[in-house]
Length: 410
Image (tube, rainbow, N blue to C red; front, side, top):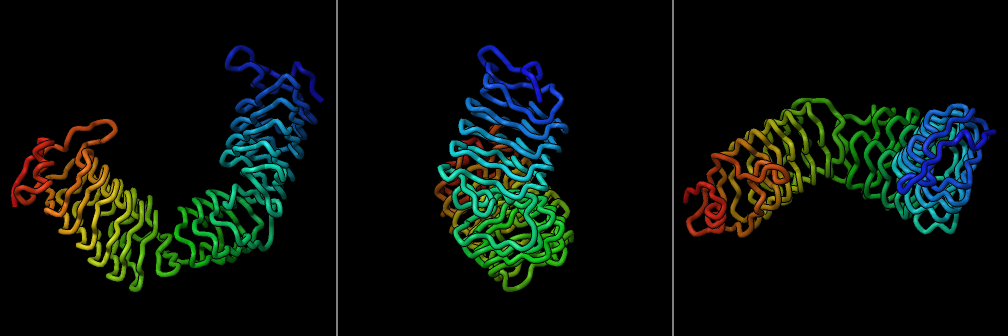
């Protein structure tokens, strides 16, 4: 039991009614009715707190408000609450159930992370943003959070289209998951740390699997290095420096090799026709890659931050060099744009500070102003020593002259 002297409540324009700190002995706590917000870290690490009642008038439970309250078994959230901040109840290891009121329109990431005994997150039927199915939290048709206490086999409902980042992270007793055909994306770290997860059924509808989605799971250990579904490489889980992709592959999905800093070379088979957004982003030691002639789509930021890449051959089937495709490739020396490309988009070669020669065909009729800058956000100067090679009278010549770039006619 706590008295009002146990609560530090703010005043003044910015902090009026904000519960800034709880100094009481813990146990069963009822927050004073004068409180309108439970501030950041207000109960942080209060291990002796066993239950809390949040009164009418409170509109927000702010970030990390109850983080690390390991003894908290029960929380009553009033109907007036509209926002639950990120990590608000993270690490509340004894919490078994929570009910989200009808008025809540925002729940921050990791709000219930590490609640290892939590069996259900129930949502008031009047809530227009969130819902629950069997105690699992959804935002529309996206699965947001599976309570950490769920165990055994799980079949995700048929109407679900996505699995959010970290949705199942730390569900230590989950043994199998069946994902329906309606799902197209699995988020970053979605199943990380599910230490008993032995089986996952992934449908052909999946187009993207986020990084570390199945890290530290038994199922991941049995997969091997390449996760290929429906001829699309969705995830690389290996540690090889030189990667050879299998014949028959048709697509390298979004973010497949993102942040794989150990990779030095990738051999792509001729069967590949598409390379997704951020596919090789931040592969900082990637030095060599040959893009097959059959590739017709090179995604946004596909090679962003590949600092060791010195040369690249762009195939003739490409029609546009997408946004940020080679942004930050600091050691790229020369590039030949093939005939047929019509546009070079925003930041395509931004930050390629050692680029000296770019060959651009007459087919190019659009080049964004920031394509060859040092840094389009901070340093908008054109890269020094750059020469554009292009047909006389072409759009590329006009662009070079307008931007004081050295021009060499072909």
